[in-house]
Image (cartoon, rainbow, N blue to C red):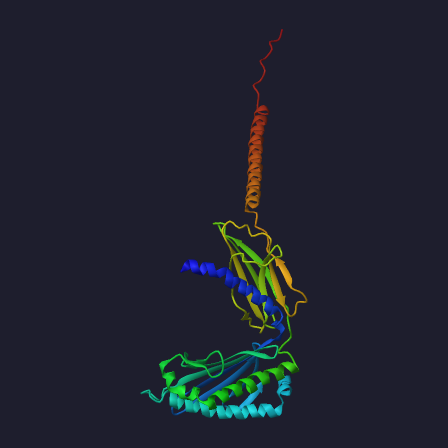
Length: 355
């Protein structure tokens, strides 16, 4: 089984490389819109309801049960959507509160402790590339555990908990399929396009890139390329050797993750087989804020032998200087002792008798 995986690995790696080339043409046109619904309550009460929407990983707006009002993150977003559409969204969310109340009553009606508070979460996502929908997701969770989710296309649902099977009649109904399709198109895709046509979600920033290498005692070399502080999210990082793409070793990626300032970072590593020197490699970075693909060469192997020789040489010089100083001090003491002996009291000469 392990040998089969090894045989397939180069094929899948090449598929990733080909996918990277294809992504270069579309990375600027890719956008995503995410909805996060969180409700808290029991079969007899509805305590809280919060909605947050995010476009390209930047918060667009929020809604809270207490205020019953859609709050846009930035002032220009009100103009992008328009007062009429925002009012419609508020009404839809008011109606959605009733749907969540119905869900609490039916999801937990068989529990003995029906008054216990529960948390129901819903995640909705749509993604477009060059104005073409490429994917959409619906996912439900109850008390932090997956409940059911929509996969592949609107209308195909999978129950992730046995209790979810009781609602299969609802998912398979034409009414529910129309609601899901309508929501994805109108509330997710159309709203996102209106915002993006008006303005980008934030100022674009090019990535800051650092490349490093680590030489293990057993001869393995690991190369690392890190891009951080960039926006928008779409970015490509890949390895070349002497200007050529290829399968050079075991590659891994951190995935594109958010920073605290709403920018992103991505780190990719390349572990070379033992004995491969790791010379001639570069990290290539492509981002919409870079006019052309930027290349960052991997630093050379650190000369440990030269460092050791230099350290030993310095140590030898220090020892030699100390030895010379010690010899000089001993010679000085010896010289001082001889001089003191020569300058000391001498015996009186013998008396000469008078004639």
